[in-house]
Length: 179
Image (cartoon, rainbow, N blue to C red; front, side, top):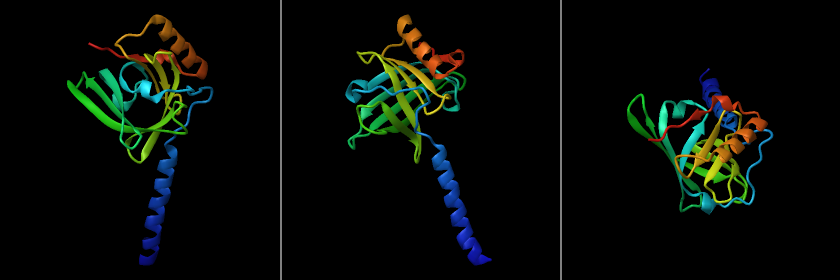
């Protein structure tokens, strides 16, 4: 019985770990296409979160920003900050992003809790890198980002129409307050 436990427990833990790691998807939703000819250098810097779907890591948060910077090893540092207006406290989470293929395709994977990675796909961006539409690996995650606290109505409508075509229910977006 002891020998069985010596084998069964590590094997079970290995299978569980494999299942958990494979449940973390770094894909892109069907119908979405990542930006090509992407300029990672132009994307670096501070972005304001304009809209998102609600999920537990950003629940009850406003004044949300994401700052991207180059790590010495070539990956991208992701510094997310936001104010939890219920708990009346600032929250910060530092993560790392890596390109899925090459730096000219805006398909990345991001991790705040290694070894768990999630998809981060820039599917629309203006020519000046001032406004961006980002989706996760499923229809559960979407973000609209801007270099300023507001976004022009024309860009907002462009992003909403694109998201709807892919299958996102844009009525569920939370419009983030910045004050």
